[in-house]
Image 1 (tube, rainbow, N blue to C red):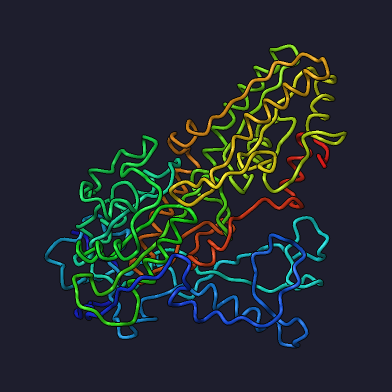
Image 2: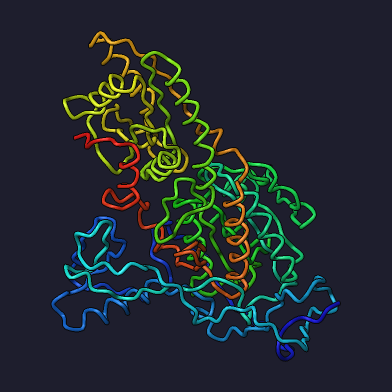
Length: 535
């Protein structure tokens, strides 16, 4: 066996540290959030999408220093040494010079006579914002004050560390996929397992059907290994299954205790991450307890949202695939509309509160005449309404294609109090409503139209990841494992300005990321469609 790549020899084992279990809701503040102290005045924001919700007194001559310090505290990622300062690191067992797995003979010692320069320094940072806006009126400007003062904002770079806080032979890792389906789930599962095995972990399990798998006695852990996951990325869906909702945080942590799980990888969106953060809070409560839960636990999230609505990240996995697959639906709608007399094709795409898929799919297609998203309000009727412009398009070019996000135009529909298992409000079908209103409007005008409505939602969700998402999923899965072994918990991993970074979960789930109507990307979409203001 090739020697492990590290300088020196490790002889000491990790100590044992007590933890406590007590319930807190998913909205409770993290154990580590005490670092974030707020002032008394709000920041002057030139953009409603400004993610900085600190309270800084701009009249204070030292406000810039205070702002930067506050940012650093909020984006400081929780580490097990925050709670257990005596936790001792060991040299990493991850090295790409090694081609043979760790075996039982190396359970207590990790010898090395080679040096490998593939580790990330704990002080490495990634710049969160890269554009220095000169004016609040600049397109897409996100300014802290009216002068758009430039303040560097850095987040933690993701990747393998030279020292780790878990002995691989003492790790039992679990993976859970929650919420709805999304292209790339199997890719992430696959690379979490592969990377865990490179570290030397032997006990890896999957929790079936989301958080439900922690409580349902009829659902059993799924043993995972490289052999099991080798080809799962060739298929869509999730090897482990998905579901919404689940048991209480107490039940989840109790189950982790009973099963001896000390690494938990959670794949899901905002709600799922709120649950992951609550689990993190529970296992790191400072009161001692006695039980079977391993003494050090790491909870790491991987953002799974096809809507691309996670804060501070370039994109989330599944988004590129969704945009690509949406092209088929848009092309079908275009052919239907183009082939019919006064044809209108309507395509409804995913996007509850964020219109990224509809915007990018419209921009990529080049065949969309009207793009409607939740962030930009519009009128259906009236001289400046959508239907008025649709009439103009029919008269001018004989057909039209509309792409609309599922969350757009909900004010036109009857509201209900119905919610799904994740607590999301059940939306009415804006696509069907738009189809009916279009037919009604043109019938009243005495103009014949042929309206076709396409909803490809479940076809898109269930497909396998494309090449771009495949790469993203691979790196996210690897970095999730690196973060856990480095001793971080209550974090998630994402792409930030083309680099991979770790974020504290509370900072990326405050609210859904949304399209900025004043952004260059939305302006590009409007340029492509040629649509006017619909208000």
